Length: 87
Image (cartoon, rainbow, N blue to C red; front, top):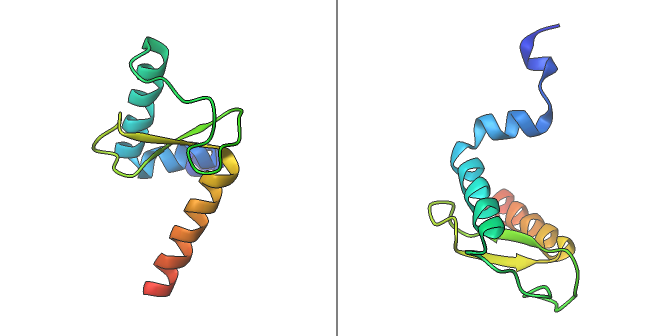
């Protein structure tokens, strides 16, 4: 087995996306330290519960939008469709 086959999809993603990995770590740290405080509900649909932090720009790791998982997935699916149509 080669080294590549032993890595998880998440580890491969982190290797390909160092800036996003850094931004995610900075966001987690800011949340733990109280520098970022998430709202009680999704900023898109208003659903209460666990929220994802979405970065529009990974160069600005503390500028995030807090969305529920469904809205976050919907946003990225739409972005992938737009990218595919633009090819």
